Image (cartoon, rainbow, N blue to C red; front, top):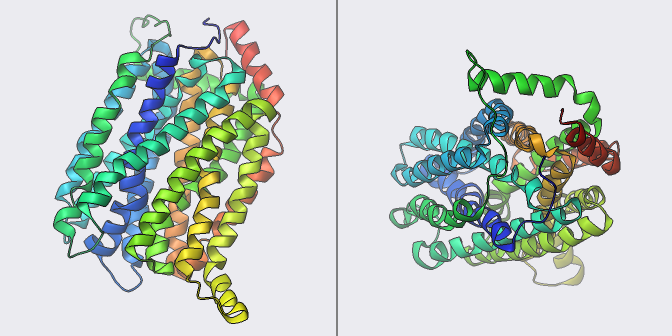
Length: 445
C-alpha cells in the first residue's frame, strides 16, 4: 500500500495542467461560445430559442449518461490493472478529435452537432473522473485541499488563455460571423491537445497491476469490484451520503455552467463587450476562490468549505433571478442609469467565487474518503454522481424552460443547492476519513 506522501512539485504541476488544458472545452464549448452558437445560430429558433435550448440540454445529458454507465466500471478496471494513465489518454484523444470536428456543424446540421456534442462531452467528462483519481496519490490528507484548489485555479487560468484567441481573432457569436466563430471547436481541441502533454510526461502511475485470472475478462472484473463496493457501502456511509449531496450540488452547477451565458444573451440581453467582461470576471474570481478556499479546506475542513460554497450559490441564484427587478428598482427609486447587464457582472463575481471552490472541495472530500487501493473506482462513483447530476439538471432545466421560460426555470437551482446543503449536514468528515484509512490498513474495500 502506497503511503500518502506529498508528490514532487513537478508532478503536481503536471497533474494540474490537465485542468488547465480541459478548461478550454468547458469554457469555449459548454459555457461561453458554442452553446450560444448552437442555440441562436445553428438551431436558431428565435425569439425564445426553446427548441435550441432543449436540444442543447439533451445532447449534454446523453453524454453524461455514458459517464454514469461506464465511469465506476472503468475506475475499477483502472485500479485492478494500474492503467489510469492509459484510460486518461484514451479519453483525451477522443475529446480532441470530436471537439475539432465541431467545425463541420452549421445551420441545417443540428443533428451533427448533437452527435458530436454527445461524444465530446462524454470523453471530456469521463476524463475528469480519470484525472481526479490521481489526487489521493499526490499528498497527505492535509494537503489535498490546496492541491485540488491549485488544479481548479490553474484550470481557470487555462480558460482565460484559451479564450484570448477567440476574443481577439474569432470574434462574436452571430450568424454574420459564423465562418470565423465556427473555428472555436478546432481551437479548443488544439489547445487541449498541447496543454495536457505535461500530464502524461510527469504524472506517475503508482498502482501495482493484478494478474487476470484464467477465463475472466477485465469487464467482468470491473463489474465484480463495483458490486463488492456497493455491497459494502455501509462501511462508507459518509461517502455514500456525500455522493448524494454532490448529486444535487452538481445538478445546479451544471445548469449554471451550461446556461449562464445563454441566460445573459437571452434574458439579460447583454452587449458583446459585457459578455467578454463577464467571462473575465468569472474566470478570475473562480481561480481566486479555488485557491483561497483550498487553504480554508485544509485549515477548517473540506466539508465546512463545501457547505459555505453552497450558501454562496443560493445567494448567487437569487441575485441572478432578481437582477432585472433590482435594476428597475434602483432606476425608479434612486434615479440611477444602471443597466441590468452591468448589475449582472456583480452577480457573476459571486457565482465565480462559488464555482471553483465548490467543485474543488467535492474532489478533495472524495479523495479523503477514498482508500488508495480503490481511488479510481471511488472517483468513478464521484464521476457517476456528477454526471448523473448533469444529466438530471440539464433535462430538468430544458423541460422547465419550455413550460415557464428560462428566467423562472433558473430558480430550480435554489432547490438543488438547498437539498445539497441538507444532505451535507448528515456527513462527518472525520468518520469518512477514518473509514478510508481502515480500508487501506485492512487492504479490503
